[in-house]
Image 1 (tube, rainbow, N blue to C red):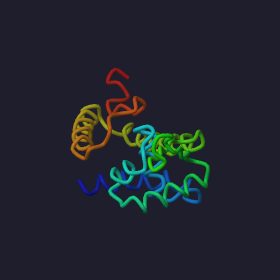
Image 2 (cartoon, one colour):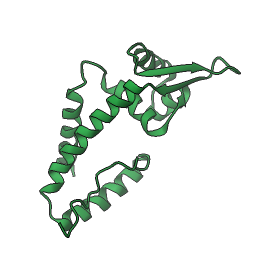
Image 3 (cartoon, rainbow, N blue to C red):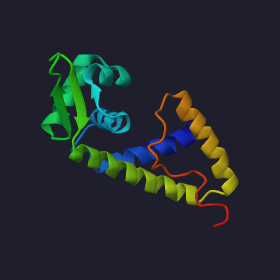
Image 4 (cartoon, helix red, strand yellow):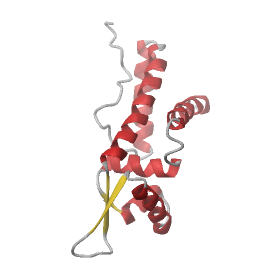
Length: 149
């Protein structure tokens, strides 16, 4: 299990290597969270990431300054701030995600169909247990390529 974890971490780290001059890993986590869940308030971002609100605020401020994130105050309660991805933030997340998809696809191509089936079930159960949101509809099927191919 740890060997597989190292392989996945390696793929993730490699995909972030292209953007490490733009954002930090914690900043990228915020971008992915908003890309996956949609607009959120600052308190929700902090809670989802398991950090205190002042840390989340500083992280988000840096992303706003980098023009990757947008911040809007509620007209009803100015303490309530909604964070959304700007198009540049969305493109950044999609670029990294596509890099990861390609790397994972290369690994999957080397596996037998029955191995992919086993891996798919195990990783889906693992992601569910870890509280990961459901698929964005653009993930690589672990059953790919089809058995008939």
